Amino acid sequence: MNDSADITQWLDAARDGNREALDRVLGALYEELHAMARRQLAGAQEQTLDATALVHEAYLKLVGSSNARFGDRAHFFAYAATAMRSVVVDHVRQRLAVKRGGDMERVTELPEDAEGGIRLDEDLLALDRALDRLAAVDPRLAQVVELRYFGGLSELEIAALQDRSERSIRRDWQKARMFLLASLDDEQAA
Image (tube, rainbow, N blue to C red; front, side):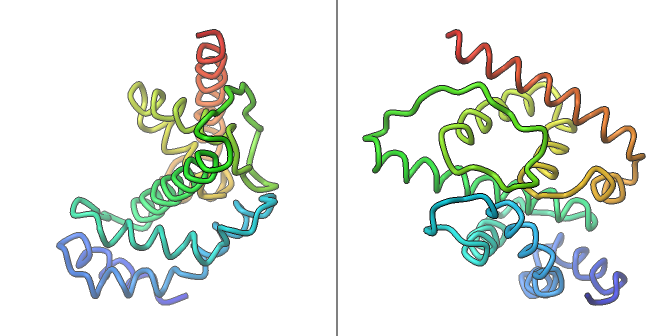
């Protein structure tokens, strides 16, 4: 990977709207983004969305967003995880709409982590809705979920990105998980 000082400078320029700088950041961090995507898609049974396509679609969302501003590496990865979440959710919605005529079941599962990859099914759509509700209540907790579940980062990696302790990230993950499970239960009961 390139020197972190270069990446910081490119992030600064990208924050000011310099598209070339964003391209350099993505080039420098492409392997990390690709590894995140591979980890998340590892358990997917279907072959219509692969890690390369996920990274490229997330890139299009990054460059297509006029409000994409990155203060530092942590902000960049948080935004990239959000973009990957959006791509995967859109992909699942489209696939299920075709497969089932738009009829989606409600589920109440939330794995402890996404080490085996995210499942591209109704569970993901229910999680996406619950995560939107969490973001409205506590954006920091929602970001931890996105980085861990959609970005595939460990608690230690998230702590380093956010300049916080691993223990505080673990607490945030547990709080977020409880909120999401309760939200999924409420959705199921509705």
